[in-house]
Length: 452
Image (cartoon, rainbow, N blue to C red; front, side):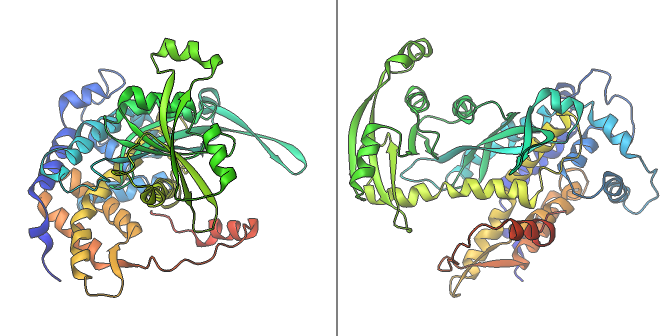
C-alpha cells in the first residue's frame, strides 16, 4: 500500500495541532465552564479529558467506557478507576458551548478559507445548503420533561397513558461538502420553519438553500431575499396559485416567472420585520423517476444561466441531508444519550455534529486516493463511513490529546480508511418494499449496525 503521508496537506496538520492547543487553552476553558472555580484543581477528570470523553460518545455503559478510556490515557500503566457518578458531576461543570465554539470558530472557518476553499464543490459557483429538522426522543427525566416538549404515546386504541420528552434538532448543512454549519436543539413544539429562519443568518450571501415541502411559505422565502440568499423550494399541491396551475398541467421541463404578493393578513408582520411585500419567483416543473411531477419555486430566474433541465438533479442533492440525519440517529445512535440533563443532551448533540465534521475533513485525502486508485475499475471506490467513524473514535485521544505527532496519527487513519473501502454502484436501484412494522422491528433489534 502506498504511503499516504505525502497526500496529507500541511494545513490539515495545522488544524489538528490548533485543536490540541485549544482543548487545553486557559481562556477557552474559562469561557466554557459553569463556575470560575470549576476545573481549577488537578484531578483525573480535567476539562479536556471530559470533553474528549463526551466526544468519544459510545453506546457502551458509561462504566465500561470509563475503564477503556482511562486505560488508553494511562498507556499501559495502572490507573485509579472512576465511577459513572464522577463523570456525571464533572460534565455538569462543562457548557455545551465548548463544542459549538470548536465547530463554528475553528473547524468550519478552516474548511471555507484559504487554499482548501478552492477544492470545495459548488453548483454554478454557489454553495448548496439545506435546512431541515428531525425529532429526537429524549430520556424521561424530570429536567428534560420540564425544558422540552412532552409527547403522548397512542396506538390504534387511543392514548396509552405514556408520555416522553421530545426535542427538535435542526442543522444548516452543506449538501455537497458534508459540513454541518450550525446546529440547534429546541423543544419539538417550536416549528421547523421558525427554527430554520433563525439559522439563515449563518449562511452567506449567494448561497442556495434547497428546501423540502413545508419550507416554501411566503415569509420563509422573503427572509432569503432580505439576507441575499437564493432558494430552491419544493412546493406542495396546496401552495401558490402558480404551483397549483403547473400541477394541473402535469408537464415537466417548463418554468414560469411570476410575481408573488404577500397576503393582506401577513403584511403588517412583514413590514415590522422589514421583509418585502412582493417577490419575483420562478416556478419549475420536474419529473421524478417515478413519473410524479414536482414543482420547485426558486429565486434563480435566469433560464440561460440556470437551465430548467438541471433542477431535478440539483434538488436530488437534498437527499444528502436525510442521510446525514441517518448517520446521526443510526450509525452514531444519537438518541442513546449519555446523560439525563438538558446540558448532557446538548453536549451529546453538539459533540456529534463536531465529530461528523472532523470525519468529513479526515476522510478527504483517503477519498482522493481511492478515486485515483479505482479509475480503471468497474465501480468507483469510496471510504466506508462506518469504518471511518469507528477508526476516528478509536484514535481520538491520540489525535487530540497526546504527544504522538499529529502527522503520524492522521497517516494511521488514512491507512485505515483506504484499507476497507466500499464500491459505489449507482446503477443498482432495488425496488422499495411496502413498509412493514415487523421488518422495521427486526432491523432495529437485530440488523442495524451502530458505531461503538
